[in-house]
Amino acid sequence: MECRVLSIQSHVVRGYVGNKSASFPLQVLGFEVDSINSVQFSNHTGYAHWKGQVLTADELHVLYEGIKLNNVNHYDYVLTGYTRDTSFLEMVVDIVQELKRANPNLVYVCDPVLGDHGSMYVPENLHPVYKNKVVPVADIITPNQFEAELLTGKNISTEKDAIEVMDLLHKMGPDTVVITSSDLPSRLGDRFLVSVGSQRIVKPDGTRTTQRIRIEVPKVDAVFVGTGDLFAAMLLAWTHHYPTDLKMACEKTFSVMHHVIQRTISYMAGPGRRPNPAQLELRMVQSKADIEDPDWVGSDD
Image (tube, rainbow, N blue to C red; front, side, top):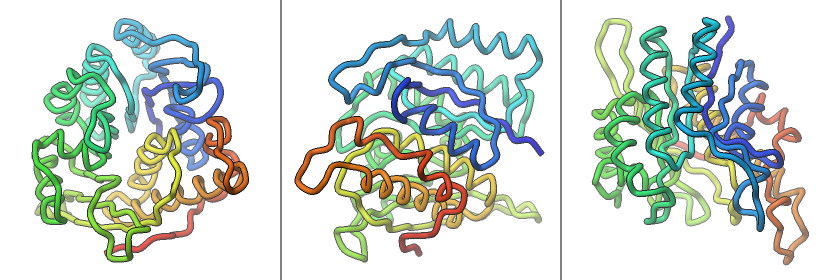
């Protein structure tokens, strides 16, 4: 059975970010991916220079209308990531709502990109749009700790806080919440990163249950661009394969992340030499086998 994803994200000619980070891994795992490029840049903005174009909300609407006129607007998933424009984001919500009316089983996977480490790196007027319009129509969201706190207005200092924040996010709409990175202390020491997740499930008898998970994965002493986009895409894929087993879906997702990052590091400059942006580009093609069948690398509860 064909499974089709509409991915509305950025595009770069060189490197891996946005749709470039999401499309290949999803295709490797058997998904058909239709991409709308919210921007088309020569490369990501971490380089010294970049050139390109930004898609407007009206242009997004025109592209979607073209799909609709040909009656090929049936999707199983919508995937979105970074954007800087409120009108564009609101148009995405309109499209998602229309697609859900056509297919009530459609799953919207949203990475609510707002910021990290206590500061926003998108305009502040995006915050209420995500909180009041985007998150309520999302089914799966992948915020980091800062974004989860921002969306709920509650700080996370303990695992109990994290569970309360995830419950608040559930009440806003999404049945699946994964806080991809947190400042919670790892039981395995400071070289591990803690991620927590929560999934509301309707049992065959109609009763509801909530599955909680905690995963600890090895930290990496480097910053890579495009990893959040890869994470959201892989969580989409593995929750599709394990719809009621968030633990397994997250283990597979984090394992893909680990293997892609480790392979990227192996291609970088030698010890003591600072890698340039081109060397930090994710080695996606070289990681094809790990994307298809990732070995688990972390610890979980």
